[in-house]
Length: 584
Image 1 (cartoon, one colour):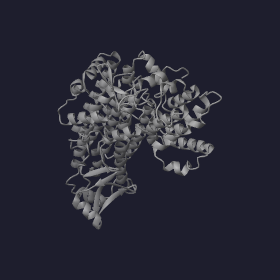
Image 2 (cartoon, helix red, strand yellow):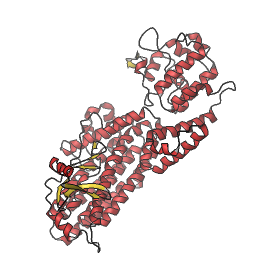
Image 3 (cartoon, rainbow, N blue to C red):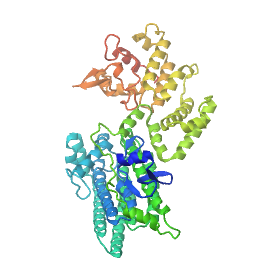
Image 4 (spheres, helix red, strand yellow):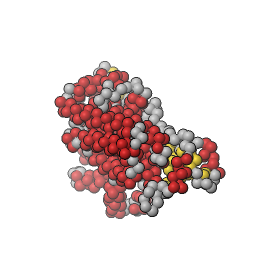
């Protein structure tokens, strides 16, 4: 995380008049005079990478209030803002569970409350256009523009007995949280330190009670990965409230320890949630949101801990925080603007994490995407993948896939390579091709499919089939070419597509769909998304508008028989001939 100061202070830093304050070798949110040591400014903004700081659930106010602990009223004011921030976040995140429910959740429901939509809902609550009551918002009203299907899901969940049992626990937990926050706020108004600390102790006890409800194993049992994430996010928020109680009591060792525990807890919980993800719909929901938490929320917690460690590092030999010289400078500092601006613009077309995920999803299959997310939190898993790749590459004669290169590779590259070799090994063992055929002639197709290059693989399939049919010069097929196409080659091509797409694509997949729609050409085209449904008639697309991604509908690829007499559609006669074949 990089902190930004006002233009005047930034100019002074560039000139050497002021210097940023560092802790553990990284900057914290203050600058001081290079000569006198006087603290001259507090940061006004922060960035992570090239993006403005934008945490989903971490309250940056708790981080910035650390250095103001010795300016009691100012420090308490920032803590108050932090409490309001986590209150808003908790209400929105818990409220969305009314659309997730218990058990399997519909993909359309997850889309309605994904990261982007949740950021919008939080803005609505912040601006008091939506109200949180008993830990829930009027989700039906909030999502009134999402359509009838969403309203129907909300109604069904509201009548679900299992969710009602969960709802009772969540309402109780939220009630305890609100009581604790109110008691905490009142305590900070007390002038008598002993009474203040006693009340803060009481508030902390209530927060621990609420936390126990949110982490109740029965509440998480049988809940989808998306439901687990939202409930555990609530728990992570409450943990911050607990840490804040220690901070205002100047228990810096306890604060540092609990921040470390919270960071570890988030990482462990994230690994469990990701590992339990079983569908593309869930991964579409989890990937952007967990990426945001990793890139921004954990960064806030890291910086919070760095601020605490800076305070502790300035303590004297007897452990009394801050020697008198530092205490005098800090107490007299005039931080005119201590509010750290975070970016929470929900009006963007989509959060950057969503755009990154969509790009990755077009290059990776489900298991690879899931591992890419796991690598963020489980570096040991990535190391194991690198070791496996290196061993398999050595056996296959790939000289560039050595440890030093793999360590520099992206998570995308490592995950895709891991599954390339794993599927390659499995396919060599499980593909039972006739003795007179092998995969040797399909090395290029296999390589393209393993790399997730679906467009190139689709074209390579067409080229390979033209070559086998002896139609390369003509560049197109006739029905007899498909009827006489060698079964072993058709089977090999199909198995390569099925294997590398994890059952999403392939001629056999298309044949199953063809039979399920009773060989209705227009229904088939609509099902595999080769056209749009216009009152039961397929409005065919061109080959240039195919979806070359694993997010395409099942059976969408391969599509190797485009019409040659018009710019859109596919040859019905050729597809019929292919899907009527036996042996795949």
